[in-house]
Image 1 (cartoon, rainbow, N blue to C red):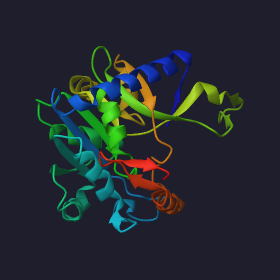
Image 2: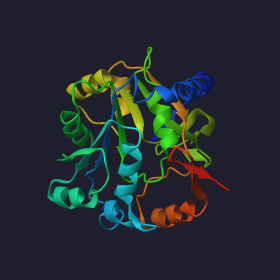
Image 3: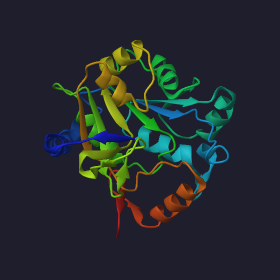
Length: 255
């Protein structure tokens, strides 16, 4: 997803990133953080169930959930209704997975199904695509710790390097847009309120923003690509060859 960006957004990005680093130690102490991992898509463009595809010896979804569990008080996984049992079996051994629920026909309806399983005491809810297996623990912490004090949602974004054109014609200034990733973090009440209004959007930040919430952007990760087509899995395999674990259980490029 692309989001419009300006200098003010960039300044807030730097500010929230700094606040996130200072507040990391408090994640899981002063907040109750839960994560919804969405994995209810059919994988049509991939040509099969990409969530169970092998990525360097571990299924794509298992990698995503395991990382989310390291920074969450609980993880709810949303799967296609006919794959709940298979997904449950796939995640055996990953501590912190509270429930695997059946998703709906759209992404928004799947997130709403996941929200039902998130307890009322949760203060921050993260929403993550199961098909982004290389998001780091650091990124999860960065977005989670940025929520609060007037900030309803924090999303990671990366600069766009390609030239862009609108489908209706005309070039777009790539300096004015960013590519938005997950995990996205939300004040629990803001996310619930946005979904009570119903509607559909390509991501939850758009729904919170449409409901009047404040959304800020922090720096994302170039390696945090979404597995959509088979080539993406090949690129992810290559990325793992240049990614090593950090001390917090996340990933560091290089070395």
